[in-house]
Image (tube, rainbow, N blue to C red; front, side, top):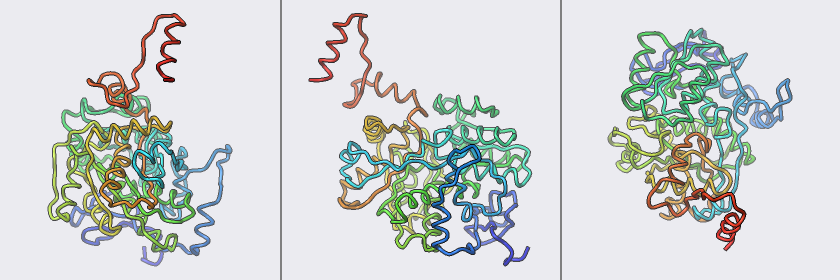
Length: 430
């Protein structure tokens, strides 16, 4: 295929080796580097692209069309039959309680927990599973801390593909495990952590031929970059000053950098926001490296209550480094206590999220306190998962911690007597 005829192709981010769009490798065959998807410039103008993206299209059943595939021209233009729920079109919310807690009056929340399986993973999985069908995959697989496996199971079921998921035994929230089982994925509980699971699934990809759908697969990132494209659309293509995102395997950090790079090149935005990549303190190799100007790639044995970002050896490291450097971004770590307090505030605002999601808001608060984020700057914090993704941690926070956190909302047991109800009401209204 001639270069002029190509609309999309794959390129190694490390050595520049190029491959056809339909190649099934997820790493460069020349150097084992990570791949990225390159798109030829659209034939339409910037204004036409904006009009196309803003079009309020609906499905044949009258439902809102996919918030991922509305950007198809710069995601996967050659796909003809996407495997779609649909996903995306998630809200951009402002809540005074969260703004006050973070001391950030222009803070908005992009809630990816409103996707079909309850997390941002659906954006990448619709593109990844669509590509799996295009290349003739007979089975798909992933390693996961829970959200990826739930999403893979759902989209594989929709595509009629067998799914194999590798999750750490005892290290996955019950709500996420239940989703994987319900959607029919063969679920393997690995005696190890996420990094062990990822090594095993990569080996299965190489030696057993299953199609790998972790975020090292570049098509996953094409879907995840629509989080940024959609929030920019919602803001009328006026860039915020900052985008804060929880950081585990670093796929979103990498995808956000790619989205902003491409949006600027296409003239969709005139100014690039800064990315704040926020890790849990017990799983913060990227934050440690940032403090050293990325001189060393660190690996840790991860430990945090935020299981969705409990990753000690992030796969998208090099791509994420590029994203932070290109956006003049920052990387920081927040403690589990800070994450849980931020989650309690988000929940109490009526929004709700899983623990890992709250890292972004906890990070914003920390950056405001340090003077890195100014009082008048516009910030979008991404919430990556739904409040019911980790009900066990939710109940432990409110019922079991001793002493109870200041924001704990413990249930009150009463007799079947109206006087007890009155006493509770009196306490709540004092």
